[in-house]
Amino acid sequence: MALRHIVSALRFGTPRLAPLSTAPVAREQSAAGRESAPGCGAAEGARPPVPVVDFGNTQEAYRSRRSWELARSLLVLRLCASPALLAYHEQLLHLTRRLLGQRLFDKLMKMTFYGQFVAGEDQESIRPLIQHNRAYGVGSILDYGVEEDLSPEEAERKEMESCTSAVEREGSGKASDDGFSAIKLTALGRPQFLLQFSDVLTKWRRFFHQMAAEQGKAGLAAMDMKLEVAVLQESVAKMGIASRTEIESWFTAETLGMSGTLDLLDWNSLIDSRTELSKHLVVPNMQTGQLEPLLSQFTEEEELQMTRMLQRMDVLAKKATEVGVRLMVDAEQTYFQPAISRLTLEMQRKFNTEKPLIFNTYQCYLKDAYDNVTLDVELARREGWCFGAKLVRGAYMAQERARAAEIGYEDPINPTYEATNAMYHRCLNYVLEELKHNARAKVMVASHNEDTVRFTLRRMEELGLHPADRQVYFGQLLGMCDQISFPLGQAGFPVYKYVPYGPVMEVLPYLSRRALENSGVMKGAQRERQLLWQELKRRLCTGSLFHRPA
View 1 (cartoon, rainbow, N blue to C red):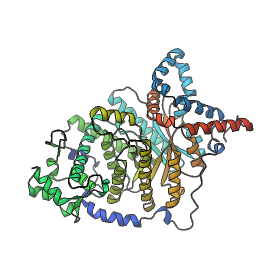
View 2: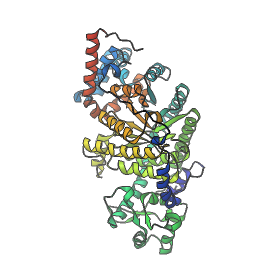
View 3: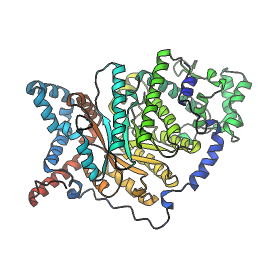
């Protein structure tokens, strides 16, 4: 099945809000509309200042926690910072289970690692924790953490059931319309399809950058790369792809406006054109120099996989709409991510018409993170839907670098931790500037970095973004950085814990993966351990060691 048919199927049988063929007009209108959109700073009357948050006040930060919970956090975070323990944790868990037996092993896990990072075995058992956190101003994003060795069909069915159940649980138990539920697209369908689709999208984007380099525009930010259409037509004609008349019909004033230039969003629109252009699309093979068809032929089985995935996404989005919950699509590895982002954008086109229901996730440890964010913000402006984003640093660094070295492509990860921090702040600042001019856009700052949270609070105050407007959300993993989450929640900022749940043995693979993914964060949790120890000593000295949260 050709890619243009796949993209056509992405419409879910409904018309798009504003097809990309109107991009030139939308380009002009988006700038004007953005300036005139009512931002948070435009509200009538004096607004209270952004609340001051003290992340060093341990008494306030941990008043929702009992002393034994603080001691457990201190122990578990210290163990998780040990390179030796992380390297051999699977063998140690297996040995402990053999020595203790299943029953005692489960109890030990619930007293330590499982109890620290997992809310409970099922949605009923996690209810007290969710209600307790909510009482202190911290919401929950439910995530079914089971990673079982099931058949693909059974795994997809169970993931769909758990996602639907989580959406319903958030909708029935929430105190406002600010609930979230997380979904993982590789669990809703076959990863092989996402891999193939991503490969096509990546080749097409790479071809644009090659053409930009030929026009002397390499190295520019994605939104600053504008190809001269006349030069592009000449280059394409030399390839012998089609006749000059056909080529000229692809790049008309109707599709590209009168500017005489074409940007990456225009370029991407060509790949799903309803014209006969798609049959001509070819890209040069970088190794052989030969032109090859871009649009691979998908088998009937792959077409069926795509249809099922889209149907599942549609069901979840409709259920979320019914109960007033937002869906947060998790980011995954770079060889899946182009397809995941494309499918998520199609969901946003359909469901983000009045407010952001679907949030896409951007991994800022990637070198192209800023381009990805700016392109999607501009696309939302042109097409008139509401931008919703979650910004994370990223969780697959070791895996990404190993695969890049093995296959022989450029490492997609920023070279240093400092470079990733700079990228995160650059992307975040751009989105916050957008929020100032567009009251319908929203962002979740998913970070365990106290400096990043402070940067966000400072920029919110400078831009007039007040927490009461609920445009900026914060998020951390359950069991980590309570000294950030709870002070934010108690100061009135919308903040959430990412809450995994599931049976002990079935969640162990999830815990193992998260431990490896977040090893860098764990090693850097020295300040959190210092604050935990400081609070325990304070309680001991003041006779409040048996503190019971109100």
